[in-house]
Each structure stands twice: as structure tokens, then as C-alpha cells.
Length: 250
Length: 315
Ligand SMILES: [Fe+2]
Ligand SMILES: [Fe+2]
Ligand SMILES: [Fe+2]
Image (cartoon, rainbow over all chains, first blue to last red; front, side, top):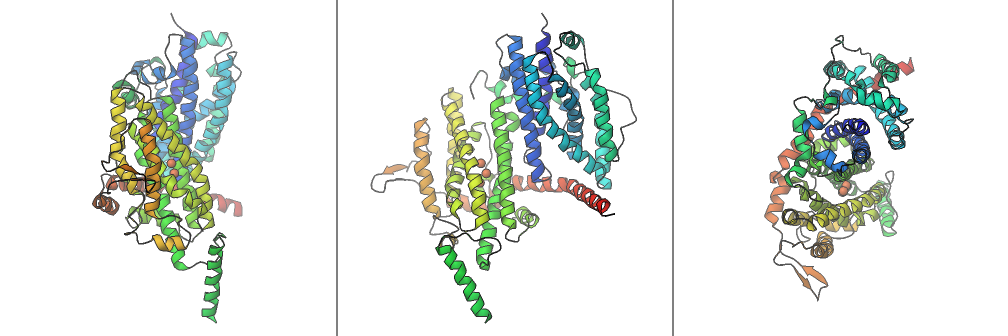
């Protein structure tokens, strides 16, 4: 039997979880101490959001699995995050562009999800929105600094855009799960977010003296559990303790 | 006249020390006092930053969501400590960049403990419990150190360090309540970190070159050996309480002294690790140098952008 609320919550949770995991790889290696602090802080917020969402997904599933079971004990093709968030950190420009595309989507998404008829999702969205506003400000400022900084930074941020923009469209992916929950006032109709998303993207790019890549080609698959090649390594590292020492308290 | 002036300044400085009035950045201070503080504060700041690496090593492998979040928060705190301490150091007229370069070339030191590897999850327990625990022993007295900005930074830092210490000990408690594998993991971590933690207090008083002068200046309030004894006395009962064995056959309670007696530290190992030959010295420095080099273009971009903004405003 399909459980739409479970799947829907899990998709949102997995985006936060996997991006939080990726960002935490930066810890101790940032370009300046202030960025070490900022990236860690964002990772911490995302892990916190993932925890709330996975706890709720576990309740929605009602099969006795915990948030930790969901986070650490699924197979690769049972994670439903978008491919964007699993992309490798690369250099600082890649990390920031990945974050910025995601934040620019998450901002209107949480704004809308606050009004969900599902009280729990609405509450999580309200809390997460405050965090996301800060994340978006942080990533947007860096896009502008890099774009309008030096020749090298402009090239790096531009290369990162070319690398990652093709993953942006998957953030708007919807299927029957969404459609049924939209009709109940639970889910957000992602199509309605496009104008706000596009406006914010162009607003920042213009200040950064940057442009979107020409190619209209888009990649997707994460929402169906199809991931990119390095995702398995991310999961292997994240799950190591739970796989090596099953059923223990930590 | 000039000599008289200097004598007056020195007398005023000593009078302040005597009355426990804080020395502030704009106050006159002897050169050697300033140098000692720069050395000590920068060493402390570098330790916070390098200390992010051994714990950062386990964030991506933390066993559950709660532990992952707590560890992220801890490592973030350490970065914040580095930041306050570099700021305190800069009030003495020495730049953060210069000081970081000195660490990269080996001219400036950081705590030798961070040259040991973190091999299992239990090391996150041992590091929090013992390393942050030893840091607290060293640092609580520094909240009353004679240099104002340093003392104020320490007040803020000590609150967080004691939180870290409790979290680390709590990891150990959880492991000791767990399976045989978990208990063995905890004991193994203690075995590896106990002696390096004792070394964190530095050379013995007989060998220490800086201690007496630092105590006279009220930079330090206790000698290395006094602090080490306080740490042993505090940690042994904590180990016993949860069933861990301190890896020291000579450890025993001395009724007469009211303290634990403990075995001799391997000073040759200490010397080697401090002078660059520990298990991870090269890796730690390489990681910091890499972060600096790969971050160069980012810092240049931020500066270039700030310059452009300023120029636009002016025109
Ligand atoms: Fe610290
Ligand atoms: Fe410290
Ligand atoms: Fe700490």
C-alpha cells in the first residue's frame, strides 16, 4: 500500500539530510575560519531539519522504524533526495552554487509549506524558513562576491553554474504523490514556486554579473531513487557505524 | 629622564598586577610579557583550529542523528574559540595571518594532543572527556589571567568546554553500558588517549622554562604539575565509575598526600611529538596549509569585491 504522506515527507527530509552530510565534509577545511563556522552552522541546521522530518516520516509510516533507522539503514535506491544535493563539494564555488540553487528553491517552498493543512509539516516549515532565510542570504552574498570579485573567482563560479544548473529542475519534480496531497491541501504545488524562484535567481545573477548556462538539458532521477555514482560512497560513509555494529545504542 | 619614565611605567604595571587589576591593550607592558602572551594565546588559538581536524574526521560517520548534530556543534564551537583567541592575540599587535603562517612553518606550536589519530567512534568520547577536560583544567584559572582580553575570551570559552567535556563523558558512559564490542572500543580509546592527555599540561615543573615568570606575571596561576595532578585526581574516579581502567600500573591513591600517585610520562614521546614527529603532525599541518592555499582565491575575491563596492560608494 502506498503511503503518500510518508513518501512526501521523506523526500523533503532526504534533501536536508544529504546536503547536511555533504556540507559537514567541509568542517575544518574551509577557506577562512568564518566560513568554517558558517558552513558547519548550515550543516547543523540541515541535519536538524532532517531529524524533525524523519521523525515525522517515521510516524507517518507507522512500521516501527525510527528516524535513525530511516537515516542510516536504507539502500541507495530508497533515498529520494534530488541529485543536486548529493553532488560532490568540489571547490568552494561548487559548494556555494549547489547551496544557493537549493536555498533559492527552499525559501519559497517553506513559505508555502507553512500553510499546509498538515500541522506538523507546517510547524517544521515555519521553523526551517527562519534558518533558510539566513542560508540564502549567505549563499547569495557569496555568489555576488565570487561573480563580481576577481577574474578567477568569476570563472570558478561560472564553471560551477555550468556543472550544477542542469540539476536544478529536479527540485520542481512532482508526481501522483504530490498531486494527491495537493488536493488535500497538504503538499505544495511546486509549479507555483517557479516565478519566485526565477526572480531570485536572476536578481542575484545580475548583481554577480553572471548568466545562466545556455544549455536547457536537465537531469533527474533522485526522486525515484536513481542517484549519481558517488552517492553510494556518501551512503557507505554515513552508514558505516550502523552497518558495522547493528542494533546498538550510541 | 627616559629611564625614570620606564621605571615609572614598570612600577605602575607591577602595581596593577599586585592589585589584580587587568592589563588592557592600551596599557604599557614589558616586551617580554607581550611576547609571552602572543606565544601562549596564538598557541591556544592554533590548538582550537587544528583540534577541529581529529573530530571533524568522525562527523560524516557519526552513528546517529543526535550524535552527528552534537559533534557538528562542538567542532563549530572550537572554530569560534579559535576566532575569539585570534582576536585577543591581535590586540597585542600581532596579526592573525602572521601567526597562522608561523604555525604552518612549525615556528608556532599547537597542543601536541591533536597529533594523535582518532581511530574509532569511542575516540569522540575520549577526546571530549579527556582532552576538553584537560583544557578546562588549564583554562579555568586563565579566566583570572592578568591580560584582560585573554581573560574575557577564556570566560566564554570555558563554559563551552565544560559542555564538551560532559558530552564526551556521556559518549563513554553510553559505550560502557553497551555490548562487549562497545566496551572494548571505549577502553581502547582510553588506552590511547590517557598518556597524551597527561602530556597536554606540558613539561614537568623541573623542566619547564616559562612557568615561574608566567606565574609572577599572573598569566599562569598554577604550575604544569599542579594542573596535571588536578586532572588525574578528577579523571580517575570518573573512569572507575563507569568501569574503565586507567592504563597506568603505578596509579594508586596516596592517603598521605590526598592525591593519586601516577606513573612517569614517556617524555621522549612528548619531545618527539612536540618537535613534529607524532603520528599526525604532517597530516594536520598539510590539511591546514591546503585549506589556506585552496582558500586563497576565495579571500582574494572577497577583497576585490569589497574594494569595488568601496570605489562605487566613493564615486
Ligand atoms: Fe575549544
Ligand atoms: Fe581550548
Ligand atoms: Fe572543546
